[in-house]
Length: 137
Image (cartoon, rainbow, N blue to C red; front, side, top):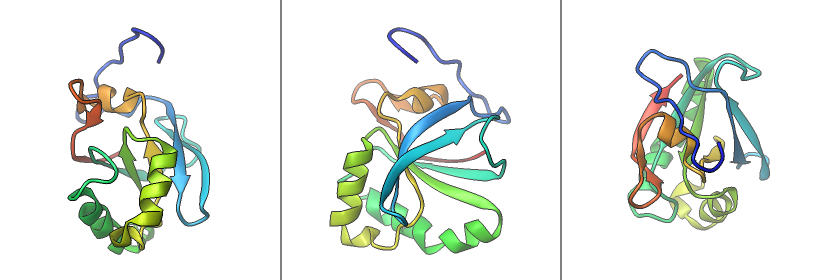
């Protein structure tokens, strides 16, 4: 999405739009991409865990809870992906500095332009963050 393009809002029961987001992968300490939507290479459940911003006081506890159950999600064929409007570099710095996040192994996607958050109607236009939401696709 560029400039003033708008994104259709995804409604309950609809598939996510095809989208590629930059991501940080804590298990391998690498940067890469996450592909979402119908053209995703592996069709399995994806649990998107949106939170407003890195380096906040509530978000690490939520992500730590998902991290504790990550193996159970994977056993069910689901991938957990943390998502905020922060950059990949911010995700990396936060994971490296926040003790509560030491167990996070799932990818952290960067929706820096808010494209996915807008498509899901969870983008806060006032401060440029996503609302706190968990979605399974």
